[in-house]
Image 1 (tube, rainbow, N blue to C red):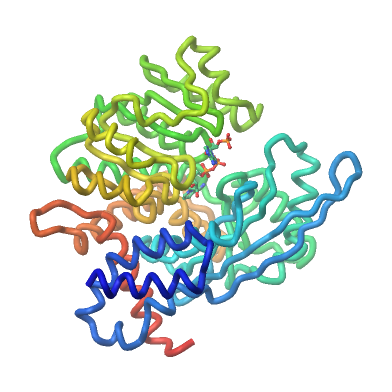
Image 2 (image 1 turned 135 degrees about the vertical axis):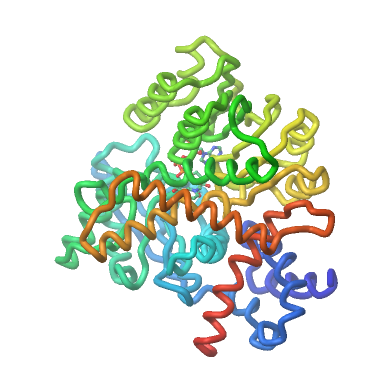
Length: 446
Ligand code: NDP
């Protein structure tokens, strides 16, 4: 079996040289799927895995714009349309200097499985640009978004491809992108999700990824008769996912000890409470400030350039970015008695770190299952837009809870090891694959 997996990965590597994040994501999926499809001849003969790793379409474009000084700046825009077998392409836009084709292909690939797990009719895609909104004025962000959409509008649409936010793309950016699409096309449609509530957005969408992550962790704990009450939690990141994961953990009686940004992490041994979290939201979303200000205000420690995994905790939630939790961090977490690691970010744990969690038999929830709440509520936003109707906060929250429960059940169905250990990576990969594979079989060689 290992030989078969290696041969497949060798081929993928040759065709996608240098795209390290994409190759990492494919390897993780291949290790679960290849043994599984050996038992199902029609999957094997249809060469589904070979087809699924090839994007249906990749669009790369120039994004020229004028900064506040009147100088011309040029960025590179992308949209990776990975798989549309179960619905229109769906997945976020990332604006960050580290964005390149390999990063977006990894994210689009993960998105295919994640979207399938939600049970909603959404294909997988991802896009973005190597633009850094940090330190830019609102006017510059608007100019950039308008130029970006001036090309992207040709390739997206409510029934074609529906982007959302991701790192560096929040409510402000979605607003500017939506405004430009509407102006060019002359139509008000559900072409983007994460919109403001007053103009077609869904309640709970901003909270959905973080809340959904915590609902998923609760399902894991429930299965062993445990709960979040009194648990010590370490979180990385302080953006959208981290803020709402922290909010839900606090609401559930857990103690949140850390948050971070790209400059370092803060450790508050007394726990971040509701009012301290309000300060963080204001600091990050309105002032667009740095997390170290929290340490100055609340007189606690700031660790420059570090990530929070050395702090003793019961549960760790990496919620910042890919490959931010390495083997040595994983060993430290296990040594400190951590019982569960759940990924709010996409692929924050390296393969070596995941292997340590599995070997130590602690619970490990991969992003494609644990952070699917965001895209799930995006799917619900699409449904509301189609109906021209808005559901109440409770209605959306209840649907989110039930989707996260169902994803947990799918993981249980496919992920149980012989010794009873729940391998959520295997469960999520196979569970996400089956629906896409069946749709691809039904639709022929396209
Ligand atoms: P935000 O831009 O709101 O926040 C990102 C956070 O991560 C910030 O605190 C940022 O710090 C930090 N960060 C980003 N890049 C790095 C880096 N290279 N090193 C250290 N810290 C970094 O993004 P989101 O919260 O939306 O996204 C976080 C993660 O969750 C991503 O992996 C994203 O793909 C994933 N995700 C998001 C979903 C959503 O609905 N938003 C849905 C599913 C997954 P700083 O401000 O200093 O850059």
